[in-house]
Image 1 (spheres, helix red, strand yellow):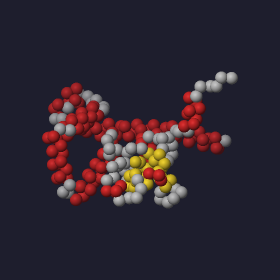
Image 2 (cartoon, helix red, strand yellow):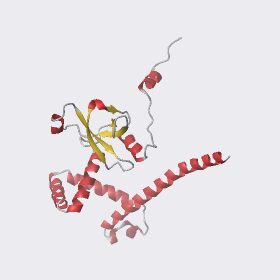
Image 3 (cartoon, rainbow, N blue to C red):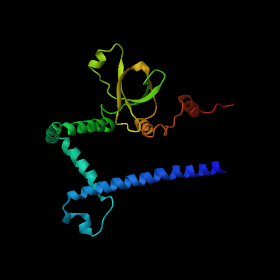
Image 4 (tube, rainbow, N blue to C red):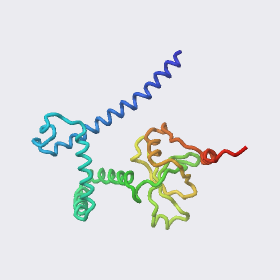
Length: 216
């Protein structure tokens, strides 16, 4: 009876805790984005003009600001302005380290180009016989590749539950195991401490299901 009661309680916690945390996080982000409305003069803010507050309006303004920033940074003048601003930031010791680290992580995770994670792999780390989840990163290794005897792959082994820190290894391609899971699935598995495991079906099982039934 006690085991059954405990099972019911755990099931209730598993259902409600993620839902409550999601609501709180979304609510926090909406409130945070609503603060972007302070860039608008008080007399022209929606709450002043309409007489009541519209929740989430800051989200639209935040998206608009991000879009305009990206649009301006894409042209020549914008790139020069960004470069000038970064040159100033890079002269400040503590700020330089924080800014450069956050920027590199953001470019690596969010970029769709050559700097983004390519795929999820397994590598034997920290010792042989123990496998760690890793992400393939750079492909053009230039000098590193020319000074190694075999073809190596640059992989990033993130820490858990914070995947923004970790280790970079240059591993021979034959020592890596390619996985079918996506980068998003791999990140979710790391953030969840390995609790959230992506669903996977063996290729032979998929082929068997797709094969038409033999005639009798």
